[in-house]
Amino acid sequence: MPVYTFRIQRNQQNAQGVLETRYQDYTLELNETTTVLNALEELKGDQDGTLTFRQSCRSAICGSCAMKISGRTRLACKTHVGSVARDGIIELAPMANQPIIKDLVIDIRPFFRKVHQIKPYLQDGPEKATKVDRSSYDQVNHVTQCIMCGCCYSDCTMKEVSEAYIGPAALAKAFRFVSDPREGQKSARLQELSEPGMMWSCTRCSMCIESCPKDVKPMEAIVKLRTRGMEKGFVDGPGPRHALAFHQDIQKWGDLNEFTLLQRTVGILGSIAELGTALHLLKKGKIPSPFPHQAQGVEQLQKIYTLLEQNPVDVETKAKEVVPE
Amino acid sequence: MSLEFAYYPGCAAKQVQKEADWAARAVARELGITLHAMPQASCCGAVSLRESKPAFSLAVAARILSEAEAQGRHLATICNTCLQTLSHANYRFKNEPELLENINAVIVQAGVRAYKASINVYHLLWVITDQVDPALLQQKIKKPLNGMKVAPFYGCHSLRPAEIFSVKEGQSPDHLDRLIKVLGGNPVAYDGHDKCCGFHVMLSDATEMRTMVANNCLNAKGSGAEMMISPCTLCDMAMGAYQKPAENAVGKEINLPEMNFAQLLGLALGISPDTLGINRLHVDPSAVLASRKVL
Image (tube, rainbow over all chains, first blue to last red; front, top):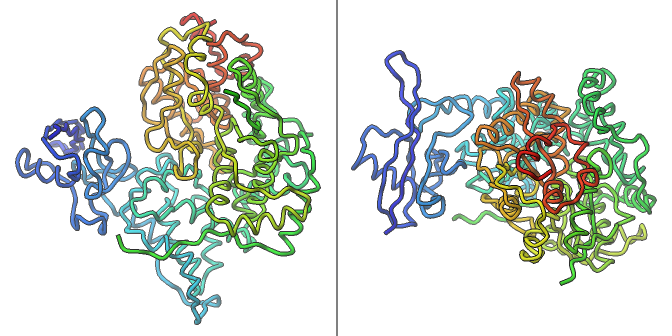
């Protein structure tokens, strides 16, 4: 059987209560289909009882054993050692974007505070439907698979640079309520989700789609939330204004008019604030022409746009029936 | 083997990042790849159009893909966001026949040829590293990088979600790494190579975007990089043109030259820096290039 080296980030408080970080190597002879969690238990049982990590169900249901495994956040119980070793080395670290308590254990409270911020329960109100069609499950299906493990939150590239950002898991959960016919406050939710630090702060890097161990596709839910927000008229803010500029330009020019995009996105005052950057870009001629190239056949695009406005086509992705793993 | 593609440079390469387009055309010519113009192609709409007008965005993509299909060619682009947008639409058209039928029904009424979902969407980088004869590429290198330590910055929209792309890089992307090695450089491993450049939140979350740029560049530099390359005109804009604003935002000096992969490839092929628009870069690469005898 192959020998694996586990390079584990050890985090321990010193006498002054300050967290100290070091790396410790352990070796184990394992079958390549052994899970990282089994390996950790063997290490703790046989080699080092002080090694601390969180675990519970061993079945990818509870989400407790999420940790950074070879650079990406994964569930230790669902990850085979052979699939993540690089030259026989497996690096383990606690999840990112959350406070570390000890070794591989993080404080999950800030993550859950973000989830609670979106009010994760059905609310009474004027938009409540009492008849629920089977097809309404098409939209909530993916997002109800979420086990709140926090993998997406840990790998989120916006979370890494923003304390304020609510994060992918909470937004996926918000989508679950916005698209539930029984929810009475859909518009109020979309209005709150249009505030800074909420749905418009996602960079759309798709990292959460890759990191999610349950195929929740949080970013796809964020894209759909934005569509629903704009449809409800919540278009005040650089995010929606920027998104709306695209279909105006594509109809008019075929191409994007980058020259006026800034002003349309952040407004006149915002443009003045960006003036320093604009002058910096100008130094290398990186200011777009006010008259972009016009594609041939722009009238086709105008026609398509009009046809779709008259007879909308539903193109939303629908989740398949959930089949238990 | 004839390498002919319908060429879709994307809006950025037609306007602010012209140098990436110049470099792409120059290296393609040198390597025997013919890039055919797409005079009718519009902006792909990026994720923004998917958000504001989901059906229109698929129709716009179908119209672009249909033009390439009518030429009988696969499509090649040099913008990751165009790559992702068109790949996403193409993936859906290939897997959801009913959706394709519904979109075709609309575009045909506007005089657009129905799309048959028969073509693939490629990045020009993938064409160069997977389809050009490696011996030919090797033989064309006139100015090897002489061990230059180059950080590959892949950019999210060429990696994720992995399922939609005709060439899957997944969690271990290697196209840029392979290219850097062929050119005689040393690819640098660093935290950030597959992260976000922040371009798409440049205006809505300005400080966060600049912090992302700074983190990625500083991590690369901390791992020994002398140069950074990306396959994406938008990443180039963020990591290169916005590097100075990023320095100001985080209060740290970075000074890591960044350029499009086609520009560094072009230099190694001996194409003149003027043709490749090297003088349009915000972080001057001449000292690094001179020290490795590439200039």
